[in-house]
Length: 349
Image (tube, rainbow, N blue to C red; front, side):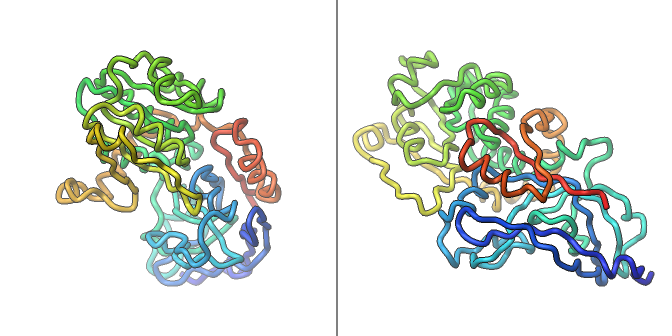
């Protein structure tokens, strides 16, 4: 079917990072869909307060790949650039070979913040029937939380601590709360996150700034310590706390990306004498121990199921139209204690 003229003349609003702590919205033409492609009109996109804010603050080295696993941001960091990987929209037009039944379907895409975009059909994921788009936009966050939990492999009855209760930390806590653990506790400096953490499944969530001994005292584990620690604070202090609260031969799963922030973690007596094990976890790959049975498609199925169970849209605190994107980033950068999930919204036309 030929592309209609109105679709050939479409424009979009695209968000660009132009310098550290500077973003701007530019108007540009939308590529028409070629064979096997679709054009999507964005409804909402989610700003990551973790990885995305590292890029916003200039804490990622120039030349670093933005994300080698996502086609739309596979380039290397060089200003100006687009970034983002959580967009939900509606298919508007289709290219040759794509069934017209796709038009009007709600889809999730790993794509930067812009009001329209064109990409291969294989890079869109249909939003499950009946699911709210504000829940669906949490797909990458929930997939990451699931990946962390799979890598952590908690054992029945273990005491588990999640350090950092941003969106990934909260969703990881929500998943873990559905397991028969001994105790599930969490740490975060911000009151808003502490409150949400307790509401989503943590037995206790406390300010960790008093150090390891105070943390263990506050959560009632001073005599036992923690079998499994999941470090998601994004700070070297979080890793130090993890080492300080882990039990003998305990496991520490690091999901944080520290960017170019200086790392001053001390691997002294606690780490050495306690025979601690530290593992990194990253969602782009499935652990070799699981990959013979688990594909990304299988993991995605469970991710959608968890989204239905948890209803992560409860964690949305702010929505900004794309024209006000600068304010959205400034809020997360300067007043992160006041926000959880921040969304960008797009006009219907």
